[in-house]
Length: 232
Ligand SMILES: [Zn+2]
Image (tube, rainbow, N blue to C red):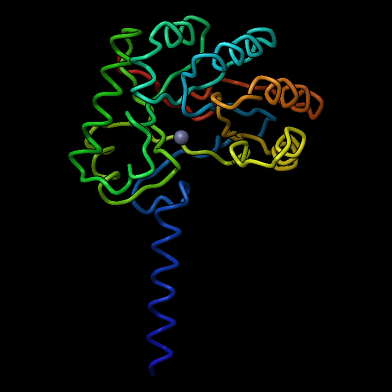
């Protein structure tokens, strides 16, 4: 009997762990992780910016290849570099929120504290660009009941991913990251990258070549997921 209870507890813990750590689980928050399409199209997303030097380099590569991307921005960083956020929008890219402070403890906060971070980020972006963002991606992809309630109250559309590049993992070379993404490619993929990393621009360059070689086209997230990025 005892071992049955132990197994039941273990299963519940595994479920709760999966529910909060997998952005695609949809237990606490429904998120959009891929486009329902047949064609070979994908969307690129960059988290944690704007970064004082790397975002500009990533923008240069995107511009040269005439490719759109979505940037999930950290509120505090928007306040530091509003001009970069304006450039992102001016060059036709999409912006969304990614919390105000992006602390590892984000998911441990109360509903009110999470709501405050969402609101501060939204206000910072609106001051910088005049746009009221409607897209949100939780830091680390972690969700729980407080985050779920705060995001639903704000009325945001949550955007997850279907391919995690693992570009933030140290020791992984650019080639390995690129290979990992290209191996997992599928129609409608949403690819997770980070524009704050020292090799972000070179990785992007390599990835765009690989995507083209495999016959994939990059389209805006709004088009891929059929969503609105800003309040009208
Ligand atoms: Zn992040």
